[in-house]
Image (cartoon, rainbow, N blue to C red; front, side):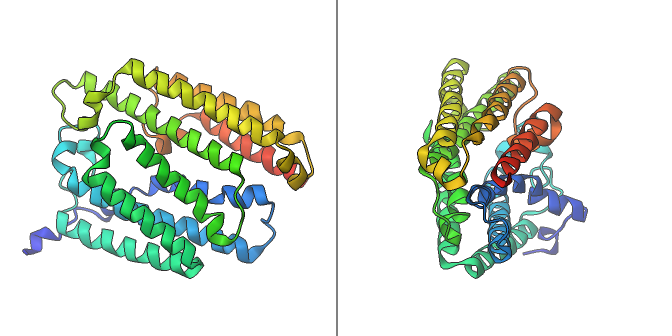
Amino acid sequence: MSRTDFRVNHPIHLIRALRPHQWVKSAFVFLGLIFSQRWGDLELVVRVTAAAVAFGLTASSMYVLNDLADVERDRQHPEKRRRPIAAGEVTGGFARVVGSLALFAGVSLGAWVSVKVAGILLLYLTLNIAYTARLKHVVILDVFSIAAGFMMRILAGTLGVGIAPSEWLLQCGLMITLFLGFAKRRAELGVVTVSEGSTHREVLRHYTPAVLDNFIAITAAGVVMTYSLYTTDIDTVRTHGTRDLIYTVPFIVFGIFRYVFLLHNGGAGDPARDLFRDRQLLAAVLGWLAATVTILTW
């Protein structure tokens, strides 16, 4: 292998190849800690934080693997052709080494937290390999595969550290990840429609705007319903000693509506970036977090 196979134009391109902005998805790992009200347990906070970092590192390695597999398709996409690997700013050899190091660090850190977290990370790794090889080409199952990755984050922050997850919270997590997955496909479909002849994502040929809009509407309703039921569930009230979590529902509803609005006005695509690009969406998330913590600690 020649030395040119290990070239990077600038260190920033290497960081971009790992997509650190996607680490915001690791916030799902903290849901169990937030709703268990055990944030005063320093040891537990450290373990949950380590689990979140472990997921971030493992996910970064999977992004590198996926970009290597899709490099030719990405070069035909109006946005993804700017990614470091597709743009030739980071060579394949260098990307493989860095991706492997990120994977090793992620799984090792997960094993330090617990055997369960390490097992969940290995399951996540297996899912992503299957996704890259086949599942991303299977209509509907492609989005369920993405949602499964988010659910594993929730489980790592609950079962992985000894916190019993709420059944309603798991259902809400499933609904919101499916919502974001179908919304992302809807945004991608719009980009591909504009750039005629693109073959970036073959599964998009099986989706239509009408079908995706229906899926988005169903899952959006599911998010609001499951979260609302969670806040009023008798076990939730007994656990937290308050019925006031229902007052956090408007933040969820506004966030869903705002994201759908952005989606249909060309302002949504990548949820990890959209959260920081739109002030109203970010305000809804921060408002929900502040209200939730305030209610649980009042």
